[in-house]
Image (cartoon, rainbow, N blue to C red; front, side):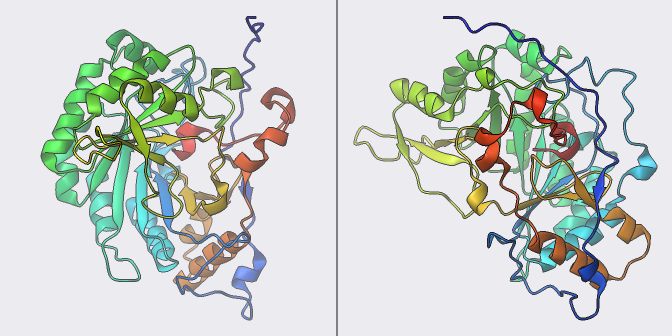
Length: 386
């Protein structure tokens, strides 16, 4: 039986102005916290991964992220003066590294739209972990500008890239990005990134039931044996402007089952704690992982919660710290930085914020009311990055 059509309700909300207060204990002499690399939240999760959004702008209008009816020519983006400068970002990032962060991912919007992004990459690439190692420094992009920027990004110190690609069929791809951008240009960008040494490259495909699920097998065939890791992501309820509905989610279990019918898979162990993607390797005739064929990943952001070992924090483009991708408010770090707060104050603020973290939205999702009636104002994907 066909499910009855439910019209989308797309609230017009601006969540960028909301901010949570920094715990006062962060600035009290007897409760101040220094950085020791042992920071844990209320669920004993360490801080290891920082996602930094460098712009709220994008040149695509993907309907699951920045639908054109909302992000049109009249949409009010953040003014340049509101954005964190590269020096401010680097200062904040240094504090996070002191608390144990080992990986930084630059996101957007589309991060390659940020002018002179290479300068920021140079600054971040100079940071070192507590063990003295270079950070795992990566960037997520839609690939539209990658062909012209790949070599400069590598020269600046970027290690690898993740490219969003929701299908190989040109008509489907143009429809999903909603600006008529050809898939061939993204594929050219991916090859330019590989030639520049920005690897291993990951390819992210958001799977939306009724839109691009027939692209799953072509994508698996295309990237098998290339050394690139293709990851299938369940269509997520991030923000409110995408009009998310559960019946448009294709569970990762179905994706794996579909691929396995043609290209046998074997499950692999996680590569590191807090990894969001479940790994599946292409199998050889003996049923073992064929290293040359490579692997895929599935990110079950809706059907299988991975809150339990989530070690990620997110910094918005104007300096708000979000503790969950599905959060509704962040903590304003920019005000501390621009008030010339001492490094010790900024360090203590981050420590107290993370130590109070209890977020587990995905685990609670099934008990929540439907989005239209829940009143929950989650931050937008285009604003905070993936």
